[in-house]
Amino acid sequence: MPAIRCDALSKTYCVPEREPGLWNAAKSLIHRRTRDVEAVQSVSFEVAPGEVVGFLGPNGAGKTTTLKMLSGLLNPSSGQVRVLDHEPFRRERGFLQQITLVMGNRNQMVWDLPVADSFARNRAIYRLQRTDFNETVAELTELLDLGELMAKPVRNLSLGERMKCEVAVALLHRPQILFLDEPTLGLDVTMQRRIRTFIADYNQRVGATVLLTSHYMADVEALCKRVIVIHQGQLLFDGALVDLVQRFAPHKTIVVDLEREGLDLSGYADSVSVDGSRVTLLVPKSAAAQTTGRLLAELPVVDLTVEEPPIEEVIEQVFSQQHTST
Image (cartoon, rainbow, N blue to C red; front, top):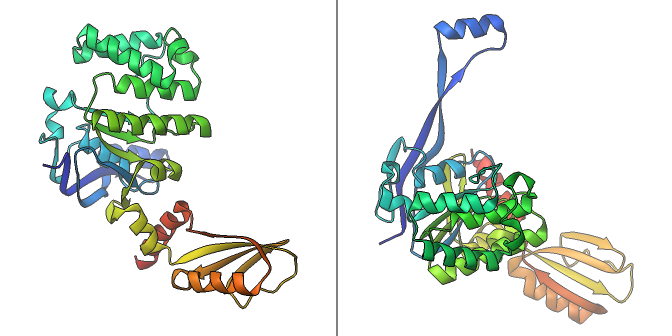
C-alpha cells in the first residue's frame, strides 16, 4: 500500500475582485465580485513507504497547497487523497500522530519561551511518554547540536538555529510521513548541508516517507532519486531525477583546458565560450563522446571534463517548454 496516494486531486479558491478606489470599495460591499482560481488541477501520484521525493515547481505552482491538503490543513475541492490509509481532512488522531509538516517560513515554536518549553508543549500535545520523549530529545540534540540552544528564547535564535529547532520539534513524536516545505529556506550553505544530512539520516533510521519542496536544487540532488514537477497546478513530470535531465536537457557541457590560448574551436561545437586557455563547448548528448575524442586527439589538452547541465537549468527548461506550449 502506498504511503501517499493522490487521485485527480484538485483545489479551487474563490477569490474576491474589485477595482481600486473608495467608490469601488463601497460598491463591493453590496455587489461582491469573485473569480475561481485553480491552485491544483487533477494531480495524481503515489509515494511508496520510505521514499524521499522532491516536489518541484515555481512560486505559485501549487506545491504548498498540495502539501496542506496532504497534511489535512485544507480540504480538496475534488479528487481523492489518502495518507497512511487515512483521509487527511478528517484529521483523525491516528493520522496526526504519524505525520509532520515543516514550513520554512512558519513558526511552530512559542516565540517568547525557551526552546525546551516548546519541546515540552509538544510532548503534552502528542501525549508522549516521558522516557521516550527524553530519549528522542537527547538523540535530536546530539544530531543537530542543540545543546546550547535549549535554554534560549526562540526570539533570540538566528534563522539557522531556529530552523534546526523547528525540524527537531516537528520530529519529537517520530512521524512516519514528513512534509517538508522549504526546510532550508534562508540558511547558509553549511546549515543547509547539515539539515540535508539530518533528513537523510532520519529517513534511514526510521524508514520515514519524505515529500520535499525546495528552491535549492542541492537539497533535491542530495536527497531525492525521484521528483514530481508541477506548474500552474498541473503535473508536468513524475519520475527519476536522471530521467528528468535526460528528457529536458539534450546537451552536455565540455570544459577544456588547453596548453595555450587563441586556438579556434568553432568547428567542434555550435556554442563555444573562451576564457583564456579554458574553452567551454555546448554539444548534443549524442555527439559528446565523438567530440571529446576529437578534442583529445587533435588539440594540446591539459584537462577535460564533461558535465551534465545544472539541475536548475533543467527545471527552467521544463517550465519554459510548458509556457511555450500554452
